Length: 114
Length: 106
Image (tube, rainbow over all chains, first blue to last red; front, side, top):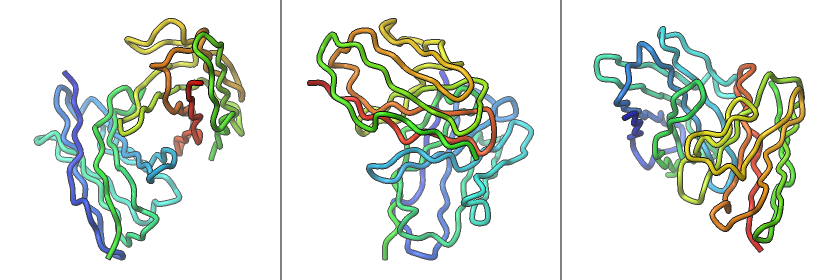
């Protein structure tokens, strides 16, 4: 059974760095790719970036300078780091299996506030 | 970047009514996926490859389109269909979602 679960701090101060973890079960990260997607409260979905099964990455150009996605295949974990956070980065953050995007995590709410 | 424009933004339909949601792409895409998101939940894959229903999706749903114009149709609206529906293009990076259509029941 494929499952993805996001974890991380619920509150981040402005200008600080956000670190999130997506823990995957039921599949191997060496054969599957994982994307991060975010959704501000009451708004739509924004694709942030992907880490491919070969370890390569692609990012949304709008946030590319602030974003880094990495992984630990031995722990089946994918990491998101985004720096210089602002209040506009307040959102629900999801990880999802890339391909059909048929499996999503439950999401983790991140609030950027002092 | 391919921009996806969904219409209408919000709509209300009566039980049994036929519903059509639209997704217009700024450039041609090979196919379209659709996702259903209910309040407080993660999006669910609903239609993939333009017209293929995801597992468990009722057959009153259908998808169609090509090039820059795609649509999701509900043949007979039911209360459980209340949700926001998003289209997603996977033809070019960055991947982009439409802004969503919020579907309500009258």
